[in-house]
Image 1 (cartoon, helix red, strand yellow):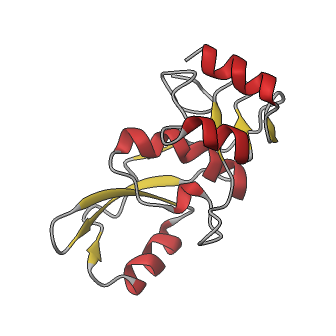
Image 2 (cartoon, rainbow, N blue to C red):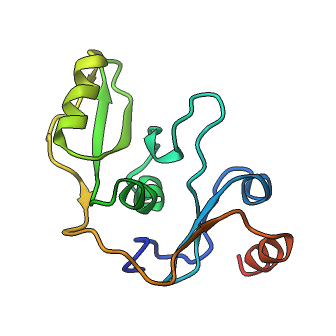
Length: 145
């Protein structure tokens, strides 16, 4: 697993519409393995990808580093269950953010109230970049998938 971006696979992201995402969105480029992670705010909601619910813990882990980097601290991934039984995984900055979310979403529960995954401490990495990729960089990145 990459110590910086927590992924087993160097070119796994973006998951949805990779060419469109790489061309049009700002990417967090892991300074350790070079993996690109979308850090661009969603145009409709104005929030970053890491704020959305994820279908699995593994997918949430792929976006966790962008949360850590954005707030400059270790964030955690929590399992959220709706009253209908649907399970999702969300990244929260801290327990207070989770509690606020649960207060605003009374149809959701977090049974354990502890993160399923969190790094012990936040670190900066010297070769990290946050930018839009050039066409050449996108071509190389996709050819390495």
